[in-house]
Image: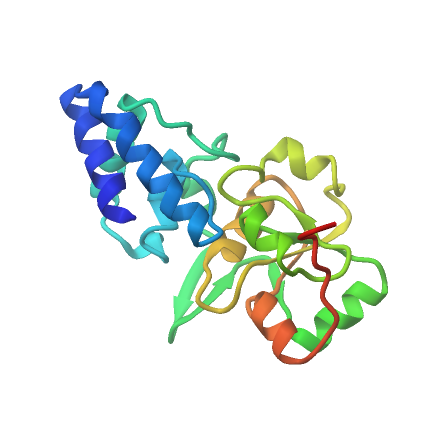
Amino acid sequence: MGDYATLTSSYGHLGRTGDIQRLVDQYNKLAASSLGDPLTVQESAYDWYGSAFSYHQPYIARLQEGLRKAGLPEGAGTDLAFDDYAKFISLTKGELSVERTIKVDVAEVKALLARGVTFIDVRAPLTYDIGHLPKAVNLSLLTALSKESLAKVVGKADEVAFYCQGRNCTHAAYASAKAIAWGYTRVYYFAGGFLEWDDEGYPLVIEVGK
């Protein structure tokens, strides 16, 4: 899918607007087939590259500018500049950590759920629908998680936890970092995510066919 994003950005820089919708449609078709989100400017910054805080930022900035010229939506939570939240994230021996958050494992997650802590599933809605943690709220990092949408779910002084697919998914780290930047003070980061929960055989909620 990255090739379509690159071409869309290039055509945006070149002003070839007549070719753009076909490329975006193809990207979004592929994204939907893998239960992902449609293309946004924000997605190009870190979904495509994974841990984008270690990627070449000038290149990402130019890629994003081309997508803006192509008319792509910014995505959610873009009131924050990238550096406003990426500064809280570090990578050590392949493991992401988020400053000012508490990293929790699956046993701790079970205890947090039992006492009513709000969990935010930041995966795409199509992925959320096929299985998620009990009572988890879906706010896709790319299309739904914003300062305003999060405030409707949980207060800044309340406990809140973020998760995505698994340890190779960076979205929960970025979501946790955004929450810190927005002023939340009791944030949990469940790095193991859905896959770790499912591997332990804990109950899932399935929305498909409801």
